Image (cartoon, rainbow, N blue to C red; front, side, top):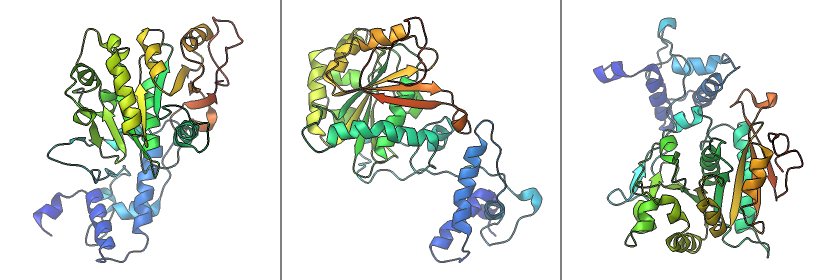
Length: 357
């Protein structure tokens, strides 16, 4: 065995052994299934109130080197997720395109939906959230929403899970077979998309609005989730909120709706009660997803924020951080989803809870 082989960890050796199996160099029938369970068990073990279940086959895979020699007990590696980074998108142009390789394992540990991950409760709930949005944008019939492929994700105030919802929704839509998605960081007062995804902060949306020589493609970032593109916030500007209500923003939204008619564009926007420009932005987009933090956001704040929106547009309400014992083994939070608009019947000083709509 060469010096390079000695430097490989047991996990890397197992990965190489699997690759050799696919090339016909080995014929162990159960290696692939064991490799997959190694990833699943480690992810579940990272969640609270959960313990890893023994999987002798998975341990067996990690405990063999590339030559099929079983390692001793002291050498057996613990079950950890293996890197699952997809290749760059096939349309990537290395010389001209901006590209960022997202850390999917880290995103998954933080509770985000990731392509190729197991069917968690969170993943299932975001499938439910995206279905009416996709139907309004691309469904058949006369009920299609004007500019329905442009979706605003907002909330009444900060800290309710708006950006978490926007990122999860974008990734979930990117997993569709025939849809691509563009995630735009339009929360110009409290940008967090770049922190979550590890993308550069600029150039981005603000630069696009200030410089008429820039094109959307100049600021768009491609990722290793092949159907996910990101437009970051861009450089700081003292009148960034005013730019969201400008003629340039109107021009940009029309361009995005018409230039990419088969693409969903998700805008992570400012909270409605923190800046008046947020409601103006909502008027430029076709659909709204309104995030409410369960047991914390007051009904009065929800009512005041919803009153700022155009009620002729579809408004979906997401009840975020809803405690549920049924999903505590995953992220500890649940999502209620309702479609339409209605005022809360309880007092304005009561926190939102129960059904979202």
